[in-house]
Image (cartoon, rainbow, N blue to C red; front, side, top):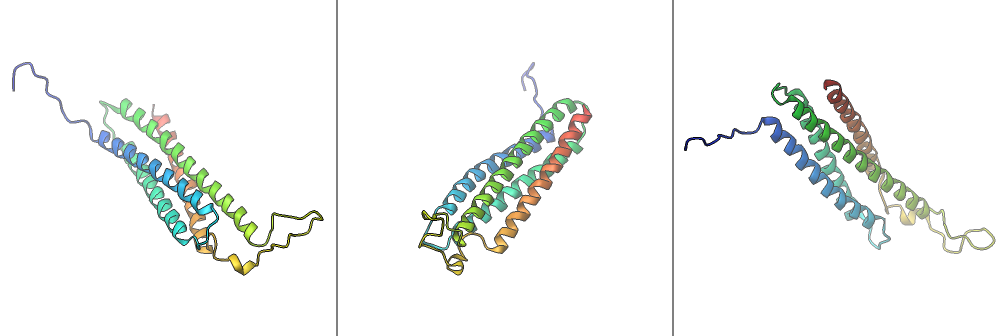
Length: 187
């Protein structure tokens, strides 16, 4: 080494954790964009049974949920580490990440909720609630048979999984709010 050269140490471990959280959130955003496209495709009328679309939605939903959960766990780990030298910086980064994670989680929950609402409306239309009425208020001549479309849209199991996913998201959001609150109390 030459004289006068400054030596640079490695950043604290929490920096790696915060970068991993940011990377997970970015991946979740990308997957959410894919999910929005899959939702739109699944809601479009098609001749197939839509099972491939629903499977893709299930997979993306699971991947996003997993990324958000992992980010939340990492955020909790970040809050446990205490180093007096850079605690204010770490707490600011943590607070920022908690806010971003909460926003992302709420956006995910809202998209899921909107999709479920649209799916229910679509399913109601398929179950015989014919939206096209003729002049005297009776149903038009094109009526849907209940069993004719029973496998279009979500199955009961898929609806249950989506509802559970939505519940997990609400719970995760609540936990993120707690972490965020704890961070604000520390300062």
